[in-house]
Each structure stands twice: as structure tokens, then as C-alpha cells.
Image (cartoon, one colour):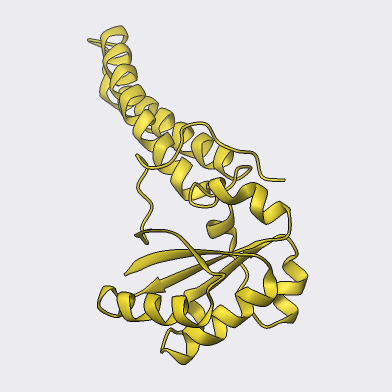
Amino acid sequence: MLRVLYRLPDLSFAQKLNDLAEAEGVNHNRIHIAHKDHLATQKKHLNDLSFLEEYDTVHSGGRGFLVGILLTVLTGLSVHELTEGHPVASVVTFFSCLVVLGYSTWLGGLIGASSDNFRLQPFHDHIEQGGSVVMLDVEPDSLSKLMHVIAQHIPEAEPAGRSQRLDNPFKGSWILRKHS
């Protein structure tokens, strides 16, 4: 499944693209609209972004997990060295590693919960100025036909990128943009 992004001037064009994509066989639940006015999006019966699509929680949590692995190794070696020879050394080492890994993952997710999703960061100003970004989750074999139909019927729709639907913690900027 691929995620395709389209940049549109306003919500009315997003509704046109939504209707066209549904007519081409894209499931309504696989179309998501990023727009400043969430209420207007819902009134037009369009799929607004979910919390996980709007904020960078999962992506940043994955980064926190990767950093946590490094910190866990360092913590494990240090705690093991300090408690060597003690009867509960392995238990203390295990739990200290678990706490460090859990804390770093939690902290990464918490930081991401206040930041724009890494896929939407480049469009932050566009969305704040009233523009829309449409995310379509499409099967790879039907992608080229759908893109051709969209380009033919909605010339204002600017293709803005494509990626895998799963979050890759190595993609995107390491400098997060705060969600407003």
C-alpha cells in the first residue's frame, strides 16, 4: 500500500478529489484530508486526520526507541559493572534497562505528540493559510491510473509526494515543527 499526497488550494478542491478517488474505487476510509478547519472537513463528510496521522507520535516514538536501545546498552553495561557479584545483579540490570528503554520511547512519543507529522511538516504553512493536503492510501497497481485521472480532472491538484504507509524513523527532518 502506498500513500500519495496531493496539495490543493482549498477544501472545495479536496472534496472534488475525494469524490473522484471514490469514483475510481478508492475506499472512503483510505482518503484523509489535512486542513486547518477540522469542523468544515467533518461537515463536508470528509475524513479528517486521526491523531496519529496529524501528529508525529509514532514516528518520534520510533526514534526514541532507537535512541533508547543505545542508552539501554550503556545502562546495562554500567549497572552490571556496579552490581557485579551481588545476588540480584541480573534482576537490577534487567529492570534498569527496561526503564531506560521505556522512558526514551515514551519521551520520543511525547515530543512527537506536540509536533506535526513528518509527512505534513513541509505543508505546514500551506495548511495554515487555508490550503489542503489529501493523503490517499492506494494499491501500487492502480496508482498510475488514479494519478492520470486526477491530473485530467483536477489540474489544481499538485502531486506532493509518495511513500510507504508505514513510518520509517530514519525519514523526515530531525528538527520537529511544533503543531499550532
